[in-house]
Length: 102
Image 1 (cartoon, rainbow, N blue to C red):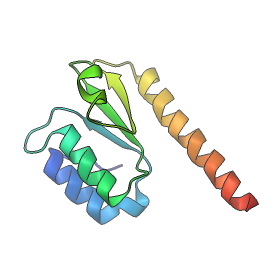
Image 2 (tube, one colour):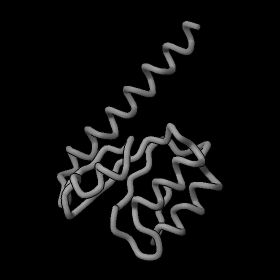
Image 3 (cartoon, rainbow, N blue to C red):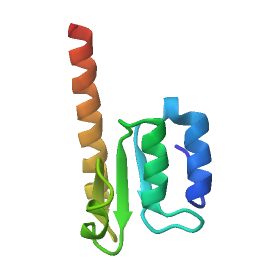
Image 4 (cartoon, one colour):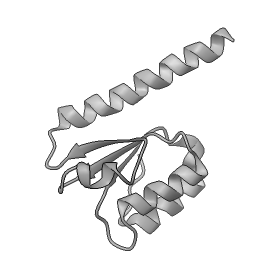
């Protein structure tokens, strides 16, 4: 697990470690670089990046401008976050099984 204090630090961590990162969990409101801009940069590096966006203002404010992200409203219960992570994991396993069959 990697943690960043702001969006710029998160992007720098992703650039260095993206091959080892399976799911990104980010706040949508952060200092120095907000969530939508961070997601845009991450998607330019890896268009299939799995991202969970945490928001306190409601996901509808971001869903129009940010695609390919699962949004969870804050405060969120750990079960909701774990469910989103498991869904991404299940999707990854399914894709790996399909690749093995090719």
